[in-house]
Image (cartoon, rainbow, N blue to C red; front, side, top):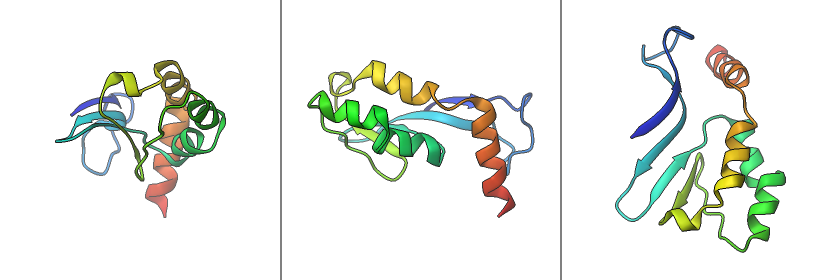
Length: 103
């Protein structure tokens, strides 16, 4: 799985001692998945402006609990996906992670 992550040098206090994943990309048997980590990013992709604009393109928004599934790169609207990922900063991601661990 290809993963864009926060390096341990920037944030060493992870529960597994591994870099904190931000946007993993995985190949499954019948599709590929981009995992959108963090509830704010998932909400923006589903219901926010990128989600509404995605539906306006006529492409199917096939989302699981934390992933966006696609069969070919042509199924993706790359500018909108870029906007959804770029809308969540590393600082926001770390704050969500810290809040989830403190529960």
